[in-house]
Amino acid sequence: MSLILQTILDGLVLGGLYSLAAVGFSLIFGVMNVVNLTHGVIVLIGAYLAYAFWHGLGVDPLLAIPLVMAALFAFGYVYQRGLIQLAVDRSSLLASMLVTFGVALMLRNVLVLVFSPDFKSVTPSYAFTVFFLGPVTIDLVRLSALGASLVLLCVLAGVLRWTAVGRVIRATAQQDLAARLCGVDVRHVYGITFGVSAAFAGASGAIIGIVVPFSPPDEALWTINAFVVVTLGGVGSPSGALLGGLLLGLISTLTSQLIGPQFPNAMMFLILVVMLLLRPSGLLGNAFSGSR
Amino acid sequence: MLAEGIRAHRWWIVAAAVGFAVLLTAPAYLTPFQVRVGQLFLFSAGLGVAWTILGGFAGYWSFGHTAFIGLGAFVAGAFELHVPLGSPVATMVAGTALGSLACAAVSAVIAYPILRLRGIYFAIAMLGVSQVFAELTNNVDAFKGTMGINMPNAVPASMEPQTFFYYVFVAATALTLGVAFWVKVSRLGYGLVSIREDEDTARMLGVPTERYKIWAFVLSATLTGLLGIVYAHALGYITTGSVYRTDFSLNMIVYALLGGIGTIVGPVLGSALMVWLTQVVLGRLLDVHMFITGALLVAIVLLAPHGLVGFARKLLRRGAGGGA
Image (cartoon, rainbow over all chains, first blue to last red; front, side, top):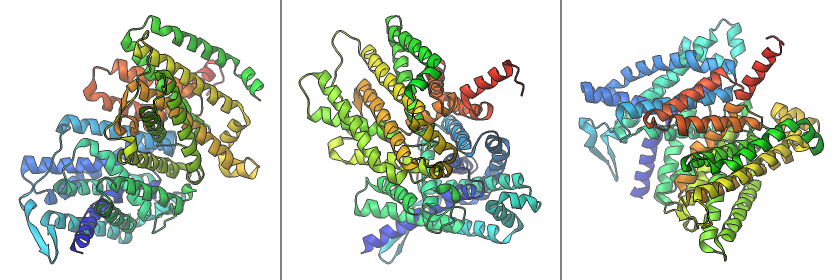
């Protein structure tokens, strides 16, 4: 019994990270229909920036999150205005996906050159503190990671719901033409959306860095994870990402515990394919006309 | 319709025949390294064209076609390992046939449900399919995905292995080109293009979209599998990681896009350029290999969104005085 409880707890912690890592991907997909294959590499850039702050300046990775987010927000804004928008205008949405793939290759190469292809990890002083909650154990790192993820997701949800910027982003997601008629500078909004997405991806990377070791080739995994989370939960909303992420975390820990440690990926993709076939708009269902 | 198609495209057919004549004589004066590059080019061109039957003609972009490379390779490998026939060549032929059949059968089974998805959803679902296949190959004992399979050696004693497989690749790629051409000029091809342009309208006008899509999917998957099986034999030893490669899936798209999507000559040109760039020009710059490939990809999409073929057409039109 305690084994199952422990597995579920681990799954939820992992799921919190998946949610935060995927929320930006979901936002971009929801607002401009762009599948951003650079997403995973941005998550990793966040992890490497936190690593650099921690190693170079001794800044705690959780405290470095605002710095990482600011840097990546600027990167995301410039990236969208300078490259993605150009690709969408000149060819098609599918082709813009290839641009993001090309940039992912370039950035991954840069990460290898700067930080070497080896695994890195960030181990702050509290890395080995462990709590006992009745029959289950949880270490402080994972607990703070889950906490930070949830706080950031709530912040994003609040920004989207109650601020002027959030309202404009949601309006553009619903119908860009109507938004433009109401005087919204849609391109600026796209840039901001991309910036916000990159900032949250970077924040998740900084948190992931203290929980698991990372290396440049991991980026593909984080991109695919983000896609699965979005497919499970639904596009474009923090709550969808949270639901999808937690489900994905539970699926992967429960599968490896109950079926076998080699099966989580197969199970994850099987569920992805089945979900796409049965309910392509996700469990929370912001339906997309493009799916069928 | 085939006769009309041949007449309309007679210069392309002549060009292809000349191309294959050059390819057939090439090993006589190329170095072994160049013959290997030639193999890679033929493999890539074949993959690009096979992908085009579905992705280019019907507009269904698969992101997981490597599923069929891996499936074909492992079915052929497992068969040849467990059921060796009298001669190695017979074993290879039987394994190749069986592997291709397996790809046809599996693709026919998954075609109906998966082709109900469109656009990005279809692309990602195929990515998922390829990952599931790869994981299952890793974990099903008969396939020995993690330990790997030694493919039986079918190279005749009188030939260098790279030359032998070069000729096998020429045959497989020629077959792929032939099938793609036949599809393009047949009723099926016109149906597929109408699906790409507007599936709902095509359906309303009486095009059997469901059936056509399934045919395109099965043909594309089977040819991809066939090429994958040849590739597996040329490698000699396969593991899950060496045949289920996401970069194969993406490269097929890159070749088609670089050359010109929806055309048959496009992927051939695209693969020639990419193989030449990555193997010959960048062969010594392994550190920044990925960076340059990525930059190239970005540049193509931004500068020549309709590929080399589209770029050439634009130049021709401008040259003919049509004006912009």
